[in-house]
Image (cartoon, rainbow, N blue to C red; front, side):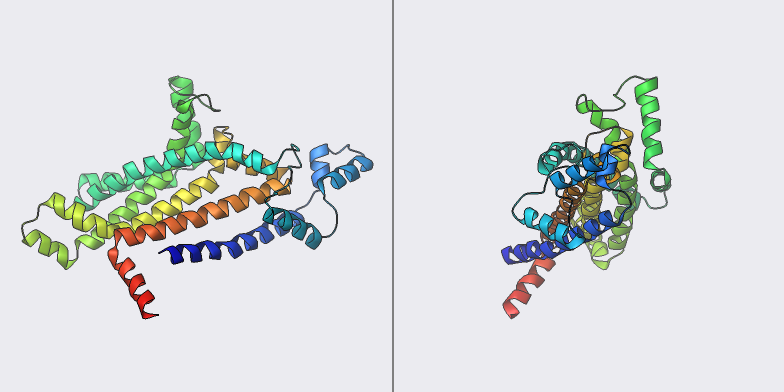
Length: 314
């Protein structure tokens, strides 16, 4: 298993390098100069040249890219064009907000999505099943920014129960977490239901009932565990999207997270910050995929047995 983990970590390196090259090329091809965007349209040519020399924005594309990657290898991600601060320090200051938001939304997704999906599968074609599927379709169709605005109007402006924007206390994360989790809850309900229904129809489930096992034991021990593989996959993918794609939610609620940092940096063509954020998201997605693969072996021992048998065969 250790060898498998090391292989996955090593395989992540060329992926991050490839992503860094693509993003650097896209940022280089976008119109506008960082100096003009940051200093303003009325900055003199001498000010622009001084800014470019200070920030190291000189030379052709390949020279700048290899110079940047040389710094990354040594642990230096550069200085932000916009704030003149260390890029890693700026990113580190934004990660906790995004991590809290993503973790809270993931908790809501799991605590609601899996139980509702299980009940919907067990009570197929019942009122509960129809209601859960309707709600899943509804929340999948609602845009995140609209849901966030409606929640702010109701709970902040009308009822005055929760803060609308910014980070004042832990209560400031309630509405953003609900907004971010809504669509993912809907997808998890649907995948849990379909996976449970597929397993319920298997012969060994009928055998378990025939042996006198209770419905609770059959559902929790036999059906749910065998139906968890696609569910775990969806949870992992959704959490990765939450970590890297909470841009809309953070913008609506004015949260100082990684998403708002990325949007601001793209607008100002702050290439070092954009590169650091994208590579951070790529590494997070790679680590989450690795954790999901390791979870497979725990949930389904057959996967671990196949890996061990393949290893012995070599």
